Image 1 (cartoon, rainbow, N blue to C red):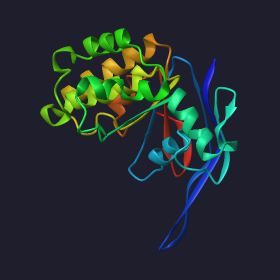
Image 2 (spheres, rainbow, N blue to C red):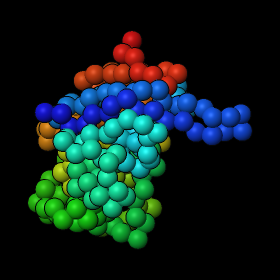
Image 3 (cartoon, rainbow, N blue to C red):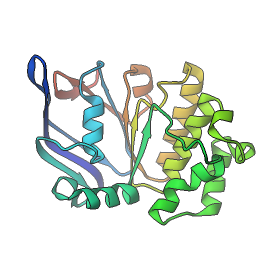
Length: 222
C-alpha cells in the first residue's frame, strides 16, 4: 500500500541572483513499511523536498498524496490535522521541550494526536534505552539520548509515515549508527514508511532503497 506519493513537485526561490529552480518535476513513491534514503549535496533541495512532503512548505506545482489524501489541496488547518495524526517528523535538532521530562516528551505527540498509549510508550522507552531516564530533563541527557527521545516521541503517535531530516547529523558516528539502526528496526516492525534525508552514503545504504537529488532532479543512487 502506498503511504506517500510526490507527483511532479516543482519549487523555486527568489535570490539576489534571480529566481532559482530547486526542484524540477520531482516524483517519488514510498510504500508502507519501506525505508527510502534521499541523498544529495548540501543545498540540493533535500530538506525542501522533505518539508513539502510534510506539508510545511507549498510546492509551486505538483501534488503530495498521503495515502489517498491530497495534502496540497488542503488548507493549513487540514494539513496540520493530517500531519499530527499520520506524519511523524524527526530533525537534526532534537526539538525537545526543555520544561518537560523524558516521560512527558515521549508522550507529547501521542497526546496531541489523541492516541496516547502508556504501555506502548513504556515499551518504546525500554527499546530505546530510556527506561532509567524517564524523570530526567533534556539538558541532563547526552546528544544520543536526546535523539532517542525525539525518535520515541515521533513513534509513540504511531504515524503512518516518518520523515527524518539528517536525524544523526549532531551525533558521533558510532552513536548515530546505533540510533539509526533502532529507528529502522522500529519503523519496520510497525510497517511505518520512512523517508530519510542524509548526506551519508554509508547511512543511506542501510535503507531498503536510495535515490539521489542532483540539479533539482532525482536519480537512482549509485
